[in-house]
Amino acid sequence: MIVDVVNPNTTGSMTALVAEGARAAAGPGTTVRAVTSRSGPASIESHYDEALAVPGLLEAVLEGSATGADAHVVACFGDPGLDACREVARGPVLGIAEAAMHAAVLVGRSFSVVTTLGRTTARARELAVRYGFGEHCAGVHACEIPVLELETDPLARASIAAACARALDDDGSDVIVLGCAGMTDLAASLSDELGVPVVDGVAAAVGMAQALVLAGLSTSRRGEYARPPAKAYAGELQRFALR
Image 1: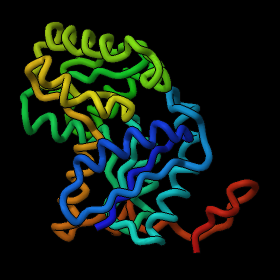
Image 2: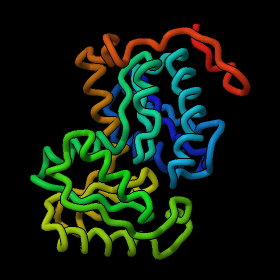
Image 3: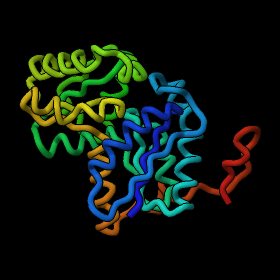
Image 4: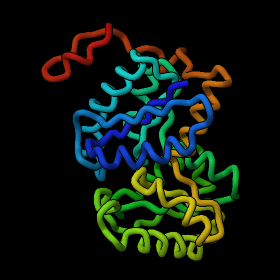
């Protein structure tokens, strides 16, 4: 089985970090291919960033499907372009926010999300409601560390741990969901430190992708996720026209 884990931003070092977490979560017989988008922003921290990340993400998913990927994981907590990816991918496509929230409600009654910047908290709340977890999401908290500084700020882990501890106290929640793919390497140590399950969406999505493929399940082609109708695209998007 081949699972493509696509980083929708263009920062290769983050892809390497995500790949490590994804491969640790993969079962025997699963090959994880970590892919960095060839176009888009260096990090995704706004609606503008998210919109401009989607073409590169779709390009990676289309190429992956053509080269044998059985499933895809979109490794950004905003789950950018998830619906569009599901329309065109050969196998199932999982976003790490949706997967993490599913996993969280299997191991606790409620969860708190700890993410990067305060400006992204509303997006996390929106996704929780969309995915049916609005009642389970007790709160969304920001550590105010930009995505790319998660790798370089020596105080990043301590700040994230403190935000997680505050979230548990303030929300009375049972589980922490890490709200950024760049936090994937922190889940195990934070869980030990805090004494609660800490869910990394990358690991959760890889595990669920494998389960779906093994169960013979993929995206329904009836209705909304049917193949998009063929049509012409203009300008720089001409290459995205589907046959």
